[in-house]
View 1: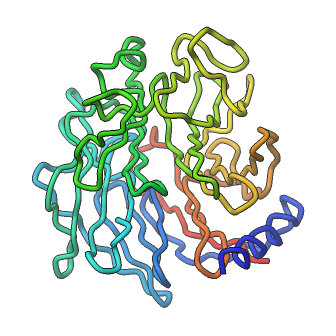
View 2: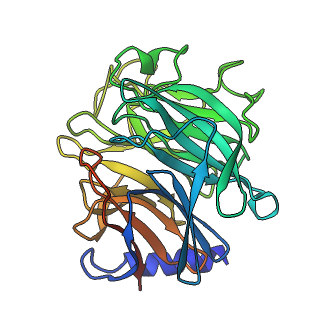
View 3: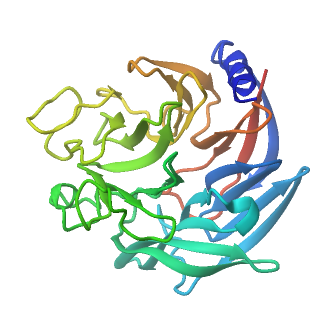
Length: 333
């Protein structure tokens, strides 16, 4: 079945970047941030604090009830979403939440379960992650090893990405219950890799290799092949620069910008959601990059559904104010 889905997605992306058929599924979302698929349903976070369920063409928009309020301000709000590996039995969902005040922002990773017409927090898995108006990371995903991976932003503090005592500018790895795994690269620490600027994409290939997409500084957006304990250089190196003990990216945007967000693996390529690129980029395991799909809209996230169709969310810039009129689209062969 997986091979069939790979072939369907490949058939879509083999068309010219401006030649695919776009179907609007939902026309009026309010700043969707993460989208995940389970069976025949799609789950979508909206930044203001809802986790919606789309089934049979009907959207059920449900609030998320948390022990501390969600701070929906600029780039912060309800961000990343991960369905636990046992989700179909347990109904447990992992979310990345921005909270605090505009003057004192924090992030945390929480677990929620469905409680009637709402989702209710059941526990906090990771707490006290530094926050920022724009640079929060925010992606959460379960790896093939069953562990939870979390991306965090650098918060415009040049010390934090290289500081092992700070959770900012990192990829974190914890158990589904929020504990530090015994085989983490730094004993007793949730840090899996460091030296990241604002990573917002996580994906694994069929061999279990982790790839991370992150925003650069005035260009130099990156896709990194991430190893346990690896240092990816920010803010000491970027682009083609090198330094002993630090990893250069698999691919980067040079002086231009993709503004990368969501990342997915289709069996052959990494599919990168481009906000500034206004489309989907295909990145090979050798680091070659091409435009796979262009829509003229900011692409925030994407997921390959069980029928092999690419589902994509769009949204406005976090520098804008008020509700947005974003949409969920499907890319059809």
